[in-house]
Amino acid sequence: MNEDALDELAGVLVSATRVAVLTGAGISAESGIPTFRGAQGLWKRFRAEELATPEAFDRDPRLVWEWYDWRRRLIAEAVPNEGHKTLAVWQKAFPSFSLITQNIDGLHGLAGSADPIELHGNIWKTRCPFEGTVRENREVPLSELPPRCPDCGRLLRPHVVWFGESLDSRILDEAFRRCSSCQVLFVVGTSAVVHPAAALPQAAAEAGAVIVEVNPEPTPLSRTADFCFREPSGRMLSRLDRRLEARRRSSARRTR
Ligand code: BJW
Image (cartoon, rainbow, N blue to C red):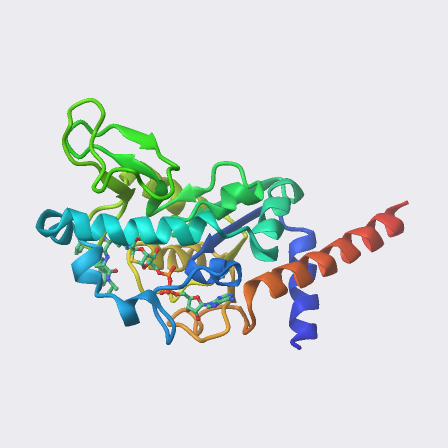
């Protein structure tokens, strides 16, 4: 399945020094976490505007927190898959490696990736909207719904980015910087429709990076990607890693 393309890509990677990866919900699908769009996606069962906007939270914070509490339970039972694990290994395999994720599930960190750039926040953190304090909270299920700030007693919110909210500008600038300076950008398991994250591959392409899409389904990015692998990311990334290792071993033998 696409063996020639896999080989060609391994050849590109063997001499690459700056590699970046943008991940989306699809990379966690093989860990049992539902994606947002598509036939089985969360947005088929739930309305985004009732759960993932600041207006929804102002209207009914309890409902929004119940939804996040349910998702925290699902995520707490999940473990990183081959895709997360391969990317954690790649952190040490390239002189410069950047992992940028739209996911809030924390599975990249659990797999061993150090400091992934989390564009949309993290479900295991709460934020006091009044004081701005961000705290880790791993309680499953939450004992208080909706939870309150231990300092000021007002309602806490999940530390995530909802529709209509701006992303943290320092985090977003860093993501654009990494994408604009990499040689190869992997775009893994994202429908590539949510902005501004969806603009990152464009920035990388304009700066001359090789764009690699890993997604069983086509996306708006597919037309411009240099490589498209239509398979689950856990399988594809571990296959590519084995191919890359084989290449590295054979070039090490040749230089001995
Ligand atoms: C597999 C697989 C396997 C399956 N292996 N793959 C410019 C143009 C148009 C609109 C806008 C724009 N700028 C801003 C907007 C508005 C909006 C937006 O982009 N809307 C679009 C939907 C049209 N953006 C915003 O509001 C952003 N804010 C912002 O820009 O502020 C300034 C501003 C505001 C308003 C107007 C203008 C400017 C904020 C976006 C925040 C997104 N938040 C969410 C929820 C986070 C918290 C939570 O999880 O509860 O983030 S929404 C949801 O979508 C979540 C995800 O991170 C994000 C992206 O989804 P993702 O990861 O791509 O998942 P899916 O499900 O879409 O795709 C999964 C893919 O995996 C599929 O393709 C499958 O095929 C694949 N797959 N199995 C590999 N095994």
